[in-house]
Image (cartoon, rainbow over all chains, first blue to last red):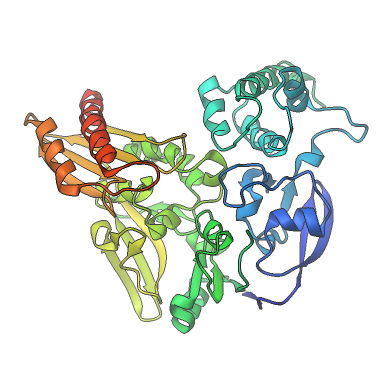
Length: 170
Length: 272
């Protein structure tokens, strides 16, 4: 049993994008705030803070979750993957990001990190999705710029690119 | 907004969680997936003294078949049940309804028992549990109680759970009829349903269930071949329907009159 008092700033250790990191957090600190304020990983955006908008979506042990509906302490000892992990060190976009660029799937970009993380998880589990499946997953996000059509086209293009190059991966 | 301060315990066993509930009662909240609870904390609708996190208790993480029922433990997420290979075969109604629970991203963390505990009147899992006449298993320091779904959910966000009780599992009877259908009306896929309707057709009767109109799921058994439109209209008037920012009670009654017969037709069209 692990017990933390409300005012106690305990150490929370996570593996963030492959690197071990730790910082202090009170029990009430949300994972979204822990990533942004305690670890300085500001790629994850915070919108509604009640699970509706999807901007804060990250991967927790590989599955897409709302970081605003997760306590930092619940992520202790687990692996978190955020939008910062997608491009290479030199800034080359991955297939999903490149498809977003090709299809004008973002304008202001506020919602984009969450959408990219949702589809990172989804395409791994469903490499050949139908348009209807993409729309269903996208229903967990709100985008006020694009009207969604570009995002749907981008995800379908990314799936096609990833399937055609799947045999060439190391 | 941010949650108010609370003490936090990550329980390793059911006994630890139950012991803490006995001590704290309704000053404690159970945290499993947190997809309703943490939203409510962020909105400051709740200010518990203690959160008891049960999400890592291994004994609660099981889906198992026991005596013609499927028992789903309190730490099992909605997407894990949806991906369970026997779901379509054993619980086809639930297989049809689970994709409507929240969103892909919230189903990854939200639990089956959490939906039942939260008892939102328009929620799909409590509606499925009521339709199939399932049970809720409650543990406290004084023992175990098993309540039928209709005894458990008393009204809007209100259940028969005592403050010292932990929901350890829910049980769905394995379905014999494969003729099932479900539809709901919501502003956006995954949002709270304005009206949700399920039907199971068996020999001579149709089990009809509706959520989002009364404070809790309502079930009726209709004789097949009767005037079902009239029966549904009578049910709409009986339940009246509540008003909120999404729909008037009149709109809820109208949706029931339109969606209800369509769902029954869907169920009757299914191969037996």
